[in-house]
Image (cartoon, rainbow, N blue to C red; front, top):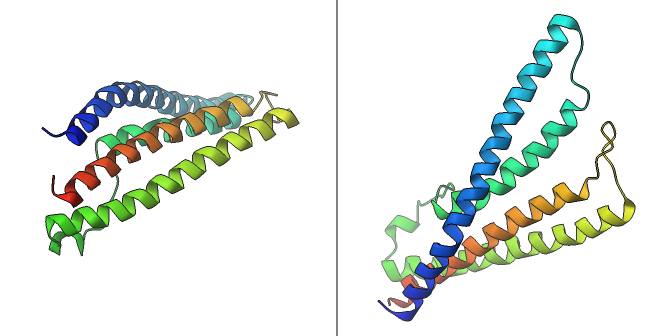
Length: 169
């Protein structure tokens, strides 16, 4: 086993349990979202008493669900890929193409993480609150930034794998 493979394995040992925990939190948020939606509809239709702020809570939980599931999905390689050309390439060419696309994906994810962190500061300074529940918005933006940052780390690990495949080592 070469040095790069050891780095990749060590990174997976660290990031996989972390992403699994946050994916589980995302799944719990999804289940809570479903229960809240069902309860809100039932109460609205039966006794005409909807849950105040349910829409806002569902929005916050959706942000948690999506952002916390990204890294786990990336580790499991569960994202959709189009491999019409990829299957016809040699292993080395596949690795080189992976390096290019992996690097671009990493740069984009890093930029999204950075800009989300900038957005957190703007939200905190403006003291933006949700309209019904009057909950500060910036902590939820921070959770989204954290989820995307975890995914960025996964993309970095994938880039290492593509480098290993592209160099043939």
